[in-house]
Structures are given as C-alpha cells and as structure tokens.
Image (cartoon, rainbow, N blue to C red; front, top):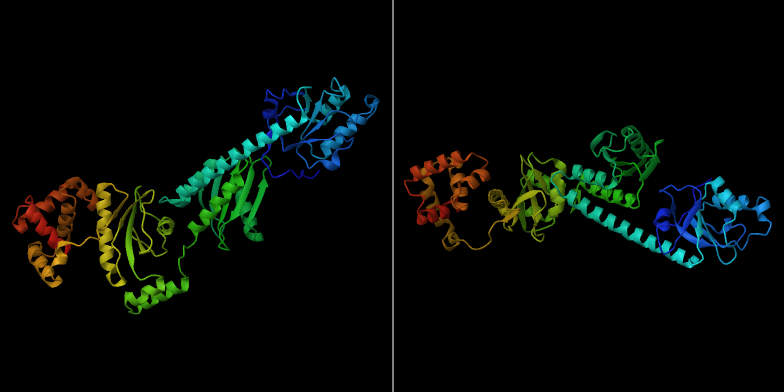
Length: 486
C-alpha cells in the first residue's frame, strides 16, 4: 500500500489523547504502541469511509451505519479493512445515542487488523474530541517552531566561532541526536561530529552523498534496514560539497534544521563576495604592476577603509575557513590569513563589532594611502585587547598632542628622543606596549607573547640606554609622544 497522504501538520500521539481526563477515552482493542500518532479527527457514518479519508485520521462513528444483522456476517471485517486500507490511524466508537456498548464483532475485527479502537463515553462529544486533537496539534506545532528557532540561533552562533565548520556540525548533531558529516567535492570526509546511531552509518551515508552528487540533485534521503534515517544536502551551486545527516528517528523540524545548517555551511565552504571576483582580480593585478592603492581602491567597492586584526580566543592558529567566516561576519571578503592572526580590510561604512570566540583590534578609518599605518594601528589595538582581555579595541580617533606640531618637527624630535635605543625594534615595541598598559608587566607580556621577565629586562635596558627614570610621569609622556611618531 502507498503511504497515506497525511496533512502537513505535526502529528499527535494517540497516548496524549487518551491521557486527556476531560475526554475519558478508553482503548479497548488494537496495539497500544506509544509511537502511534493521529493527524486529525474525522466523523463519518458512511458504511465505507474509504473515499473520505486522507490517511492518519482518528475516525469517529456512533454506529448509525451498522445494520441489525451485522454481527452475523463479515460487515465489521469489511468495514475495518477499508479503514486500514485508507490509512486510518484509529477508530473511535461513541456509546450514544445508538449503541450502549461497542459491538464485540467490531472489537474482534480491530484486533485482527491491528487498528486501535477507542471507546467514546456518552458525555464526550465528537466535536470535543476533534477540538482536543487540534489543540494538541497546535501545541505540537508551537513546540516544533520553538525547537527550530532555537536551533537556528544556535547554528548561527556556531557559524561565527573561530572553528565554524566543526562547530556547526557539532551543533547539528546535538540538535538531531545523530551524526553530521561534511563531504568534499571528491567524496572524502572533511569533518564529522556526533556519535550517531548504534549501527554503522558512515558507509551508507557516504554512498547517499555520492548518489546525490551523481544525480545532480539538491537533497536525498534513505532509511537503513535498522530504521536509521539518512539525509544528504548539496551545498552551494555545483561545488561538490555535501552535508550528510544520520539520525535514529525523524523528528518534526529536523529537515528545516538541517537545511539551515546546509545554508550556513554553503557560505562557510564558499568564498564570501561583496564585489565581483573580476574586480578583485583586477585590483590585485594592478597592485602587482605598480598601481597606487588609491587608484585600486574603487575596484574593491569603497574609498575609505579600516583594518581589523583578529585572533581566536582558543589556542591554535585559525584555518582558512575560520578566516573566511570572520570576514563574512565583519562584512568583507578581503581577508588575509597570517601566522596566528587574521587581517580583514573592512569598508568604512561597516562598523566592526565583537565576534564570539575572537579578540579583535580595529584601526581608525583611513584612505588607501594610509593602509600600512592602519595595519600597524590594528596590530597595536589587538595587542591591547589581548592584554586587557577585551573582545574588541578600536584605535582612538581623537586628535593627539603631536597634531599640534608640524609633522617634520614632531618626527625630528621623536628620532632625537629615541636615538639611544638604536635600531632595536624589540626595545621600542616593548616600551610602547608597556607604556600603553600603564606599566603592567603581566599584561605587557601577554600582549607581546613573551615572559614577564623578558619585559622587565627590556624595560630596564631602555631606562639604561635613555638614562632616565621611567617612573616619572613627565618622562613617560614625552616617550609616548615620541613613540607615536616612530
């Protein structure tokens, strides 16, 4: 028999309907499997209700259609057989106003065809039973929508983490109670999460993913002999990535949750673009051929920019997918994955915000000619953010004291003050960071990634070379003035 065309509404467990004390329903025949569900309630006094059933209904009848001599023939067997053939989920028999008891032959037929038979007491109306079914459906629908919404939010948070692909797979596996696998264009398993059902599913799931890519379909599903539900989702348009999900059971909303994960993984495995690839390629070629940054910037979609440096809070260097995810979160595809640091060139109209799992430092808004200076500002802001354990630190945009002097005089003074330090960048960087953190040894060590004793030795060396007292506020102010011009 084909699967009944049940309506697209959340089913109601038959046990939940029987548990309603206001209905006082009693099951007197048929299986009592807790997994039995109904998709609606329908009242009919037709001798053959088959043409009027979609499948999955609780059919309610008062037995008006039953002839007087029904008990001596095959009437009840034929009647129940037609209900089962139509996909009816259960039969409810009302004790009023026609019959005082449920006919024994009907009970026997329901037992034979394994159709749950409910006794409806006289005080319970069929409309009351139907209303209870729809109330339970509404509750189930609300619970399903809440579950899907919570899953969408948790998947979005997972996608913004430094390890977005494994995080999304882990969260999807948790939400579906199964296993989630990402397959590459060649069918190889790239990442996976979740223990999955008791039976081995990696082989069948990989085969389903292969079939999906071979047929060029968007989704595919299957069920193993043990009842494990398998589903595969193509990511993006023709890139060959596939998301596979294996769950021990199919819950309402699972398909929607998996579809959300597939969309997020499509973005994470593909290149985030805010402009055309041709324009970006043209900009790169022009820079390599010697064009000035200000002539190339219009090809990238903006005139003024800021540089953002990001470092994952978790240990370990970020990978290319994590870097792309950070760029997508900040609204820019212009991402550079360095050694332990991700640099993003962000248009000025997109204000950077703190991102979960990342420590960020942002420069001031500058023109293309000042990109190198902005890169330095972002690096210093990131160092300060790590030292102060702030999720995001922005480079100050207020006018500095040096702006009150002509640039050439300020730079000359800076060179003269810092000349004793020679050409040792480690000393100048340590002194600058130490001053910016108000002389904090531990925070300076964290910002520079060195031991605190190394910081003490360098600061002591600076004090000796400069022949000055670094505890003097006036000295610190003058040195800070000079270091900002270096």
